[in-house]
Amino acid sequence: MIHLVNVGVRHGAQILFTDANVQILENHRIGIVGPNGAGKSTIFRLIVGEETADSGEVNIAKRTVVGYFSQNVGEMSGRSALEEVMAVMEDVVRLGEELKVMEAQMSQPMDDDAMTELLERYGEAMEMFENKGGYDLDSRAKEILTGLGIGPDAYNRPVESFSGGWKMRIALARILVLNPDVLLLDEPTNHLDVESIIWLEEWLTSEFKGALALTSHDRDFMNRIVTTIVEISNKQVTTYNGNYDFYLKEREIRRENLIASHRRQQEMLAKDEAFIARFKARVSHAAQVQSRMKKLEKIERIEIPPEQRVIRFEFPEPPRSGDEVVTLKKLGKIWPNPNGEDKSVFQNVNGMIRRGEKVAVVGVNGAGKSTFLKVISQQTEPTQGNAKIGANVNIGYFSQHSMEILEPSMSILDTVQQVMPEASLGSIRKLCAAFLFQGDDVDKPISVLSGGEKSRVALATMLVRPLNLLILDEPTNHLDIQSREVLLDALENFSGTVVIVSHDRHFLRALATRVFEIDRNEMRIYEGKYEYYLRKRKDFLQ
Image (cartoon, rainbow, N blue to C red; front, side):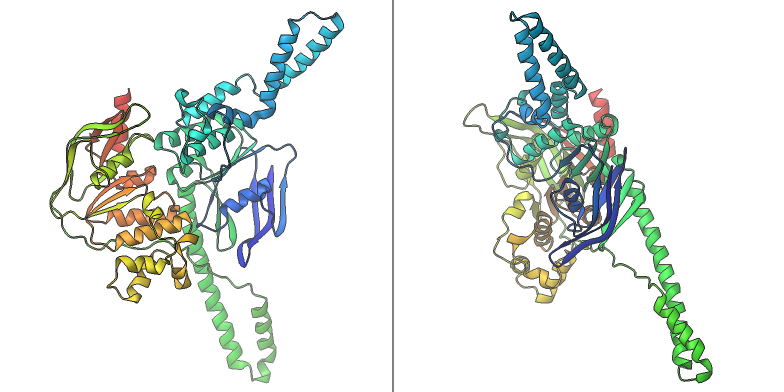
């Protein structure tokens, strides 16, 4: 269906990849992985014609319908959410309108010839409408919108009234309704809650029959969906047959084999070079020397690509807090609404967060997870009750707002130095390097950084403070899988207390020791890990 043959792409002086070969065939389920900036999204843009390769060919079979979901949703206005989703099938919607017009005409008096001609046109249009899925378009659009968290009460809301994250869901629904031959999804889970991610997994595995290529920072999602991994790293594109976990193991095996082959080659080269050096001046060995020199010239040298840089850090030992870190008594929060009824987020919450616990706060989008974190981090006041902070508790709070309050004109180095003014320049550079900002990178102004880079800066400025309670609202949102793994390792080894909101199930499964669920203005506390919560919740729903 789609073949990228010996494709090379360069962005300015940066070479993304050379001689890349990628195939997307019928029923393929491909995950594209690699560090940020390696060129994952570029593969999609080449396929849909938004970018042109510097070398090689991009071949797409005739009549192949390609659906592309990217993080750039474009302008949405003038339609309801449902109309926006159905508009992707504009020709089908138009056919449906034509059928209605012809049905109205049939009820009008006309001569036999005109009626015969009308019936023929109607029959052809109806057959085309049916073949293109027109009869179930409305129900499919509603099913997909609901699965992505936009229920019947929001079908007819103007798209302009939705926030950016919810517009992303509408854009994703639009591509899924298209039901293309090849579906390209660039980070489809970024703005979804866990429930919507699970629905999307099930839809892609049971409902969608076409070929699929996707990028995602969600390890669980990748493992459940893809059967082939295409890695872009060190300017090369490599294919692995298996899911993400298989790819990690296989990549390590291949690297170990490459290192072993490199070592054997170096030993052989050293012997030949020693022989040449020893007998170069002897006429009696001239032929042998020449033979070995020619042999060395022809040998293709094995190169070991550098390992991918990832964040490497560990939290400094925090000061010890009291055993009772946060005590919740009849806690409630209501957001006032000047244009209507006030919104109750949660109420009558009682409980305690103890020293050393790793608490996951879960719930659907809009349930109030971020509000709960804001209350216990003292970013906002509760409406009722209280969240009492224990003795010697030093709070660190991270949210997407943490990136927004970074000073755009300041450099990375100055930003970090601002929170550790007494540290030496060497210590500051060392911390920056731990977060992948090395050499001249530290002089970049915040304004030019990507979302992932800003996230790393914000985490770095929080890291250097003597904190023993970390309150983290979606800290993994802009981190790639490898960086998430390193952050996870650091949090697991952190001796303080963690309260976290994340839609990364792998992250929560590995980290959480307790789960607080916000559901329908109430909070339920589960005294166990994330898997325990999932089992209990399933029993509760049944």
